[in-house]
Image (cartoon, helix red, strand yellow):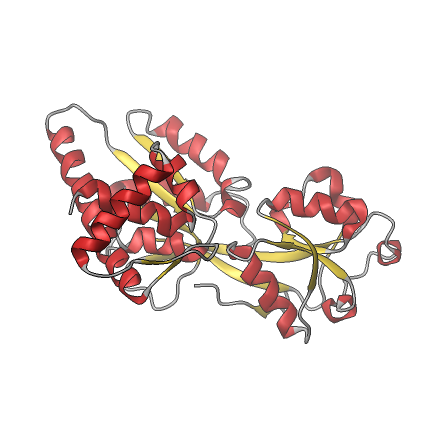
Length: 304
C-alpha cells in the first residue's frame, strides 16, 4: 500500500468518477484503475461499487477513505513542517469551501488577506458538496472551512452570517410583474432548472421544495450556479440559487421567497482553538458583506 494509491482512492471518492480522478491526478485512467485494483486485492475487497455513475464507495470504502484522508494529510503536513523549519517553504493556509462562496464572497477576502500576509501562501479548495469540504477540514486536508455550519462539530466554529435562496424566473414570467415575494408551493407544477444530483446545492433545493410540499420536475440539470440562473431566465423554468450568486444583469428576474429559506454560514477548524493564521483570515472574512440577520420568518435549513 503506497501513499500514491491512497491519493488515487481519495480522488475517485471526491470526484465520484475514475475519469475525473485521473485528470486530477495527471495520470491515465487505466493506470489509476489498475493501481486501485492492486490496492483492493491487497485489502481483500472492493472499495467502490462498479460500474454505476457516479461511482459510489462500498461500506469498506467509506471506512478506508476516512483513514486514508488522515494518512495523506499527515504526510503532507510532515513534509510541510520540515520545509518550513528549513526555510524552504512559506507558511500556507488551505481553505475548504463550496462553489457558491468561492465565486461570490471569498475572492475579495483572499485578496485582502494576501495583501496583509504577503509572505504566506493561500490555497482555496472548492468542493461541489459541503460534506466533502467539512470532511476535508475534519481529516486535516484543509486548515480552515468556510461554508454552511457543520452539525455536532467538535472543533472551533465562528459564526459569519446567513445565506438564503431566491428564485430566478423566466424573463417573461407573469410573477415578475409584481415585486412581491413568491410562494414556493405556487411553483410546484413548473418544470425546473436543477443542479446535478451530486451537487450540494441540489440537495438544498430538493429540501426546500420538499418543505413546500412537492418534488421539482427537472427540465435540465447543471453543475454551475450562474448557468442555473441564466437557464432559468432564458425561459426553461424557475431555479433556486443563493442570493449572492445571482448575476447582476439578471436582477430583474429574481424574486424573494415567501417564507424565506436560509442557512447559517461559519468558519470552522478541526482543533478546539484557532491558530494565528486561522484567526487572521477569519478577521478579514468577518468584514465581508455577510447577511448578519436571519430573514424574518425564515425556514432554516440545517446543511451540516
